[in-house]
Length: 317
Image 1 (cartoon, rainbow, N blue to C red):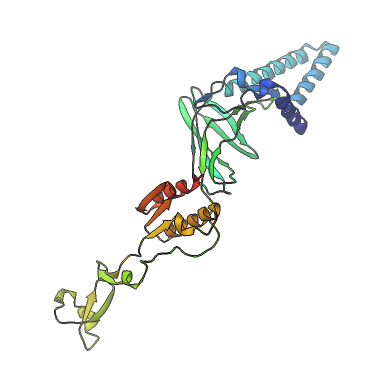
Image 2 (spheres, rainbow, N blue to C red):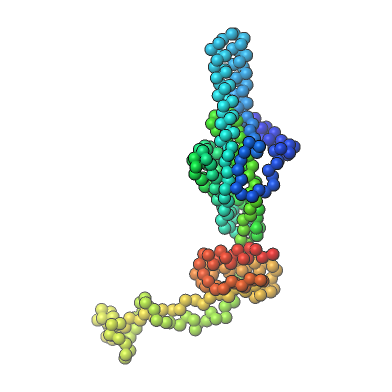
């Protein structure tokens, strides 16, 4: 029964223009109203209606006032549940949509903010096979997170979302469509393996020692070393005096990631390699700069710098 109702609903959406009115993207905020909320009986509601019809025929046939009264009360309750299901969506507003970060092929998380002037219960947000249940308190906002699949880098428009509810009795299903006019940026997929970036300054000279604050090693005493650096306890176990050495190796040199260094690769292959280099630099906590056609990002490090560089790669034409 449920499968048949879903097929009827799909056919109606395809055939009736009134049900496809809101397929075009809309600017935020999007508020639901009576012209865009649809309601049909559930399979349980159809069975309950048949039961009421049988009860009504039996009560009239046997002139049983108590049975007739019960049938009327149950019918009134079912009609009221249809109104309550409709009002559970009526006036609900989608105010904000924020997209996270994801690499092509991974799901990107959307954060949606719903506002309402009264309490809403048992609402479900559907996207494909994913369904998220939530409720909204009066005069507050509800934050709903749902994951959207991605296929390729670049700006990806948001798909249509469906809001539905069968609250309170499950006899009727009310639903409406949301299609925000908004896109999310999908980062390029890094290549699985390849050569490291060319860093001509990455030699032994940049690994020489310099003065630091942490103990590096103990060495033999040399004339002119201050007495405060002498390791007296360690020297007591040796014939010679030992001195604390506070020299530390310098941090590794920065990477200069340049689009022009990959002239032998195609456009997408260049993007994939640069994305891998950015990930390796971020994992190794290196400083790095990025040169792209029309864009030059100076040296930096950290999650924000990584996101800036990956977003620049994703937006290449």
